[in-house]
Length: 152
Image 1 (tube, rainbow, N blue to C red):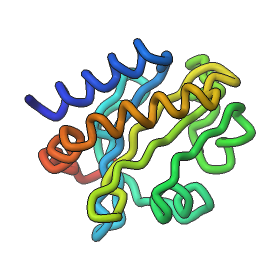
Image 2: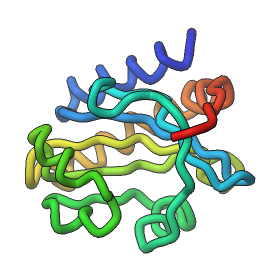
Image 3: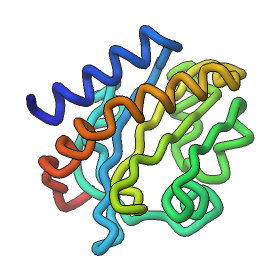
Image 4: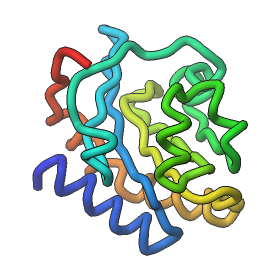
């Protein structure tokens, strides 16, 4: 199974379980301090190309530093961290959830799900975290197979 197959299967499962209007996967190269989008449900708006530096803010500390899920049920909750919040809103998304995937207590990637305002109820957060947990081994294999592309 290719990384894209693994990511697409998780996307389908998340959509069926809770809905996922915009769904992306990000892979990290912590040594280089780089992040790369490895999968996108909207490849025209969010292409799978290039790398970008990992940020240094409260979101990074929570998700990458502590390995905790980030949930914002309105644009104001994520706009300080997501420079592209206007594009996210243009796609009909006003809520964001980022689930870290850890290996050896370090985040190696994130599963990113965006949808309408108020979408991420406690029940949906639990269900989506469970889906990622159930596919943890497959995700690690897929992350390891992704080659980060230089550029942005």
